[in-house]
Amino acid sequence: MTAQETLENVEKALDEIRPFLISDGGNIKLLSVENSVVKVQLEGACNGCSVNQMTLKNGVEATIKKYAPQIEEVVNVG
Image (cartoon, rainbow, N blue to C red):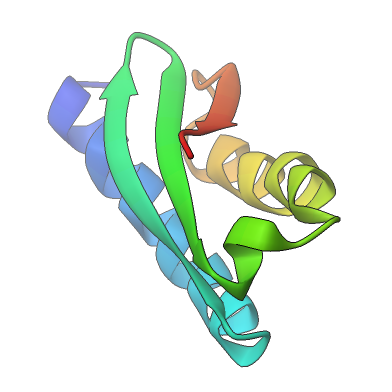
């Protein structure tokens, strides 16, 4: 898979997740994909939420890996 295809697949995954985050008053922005690490920024209510690490790992990372299995980790850059 090319870097461009990986980026497109990560965006597809975020598009799937975004409505759930928005319904809770938050959002997510893709900052970069470097090697096998996706860097995102949680926004709005997600930024200060006490369960955002769980959301990041169980929701965001799992969905991204479904679309782009070569991704190893998703990190929130505050």
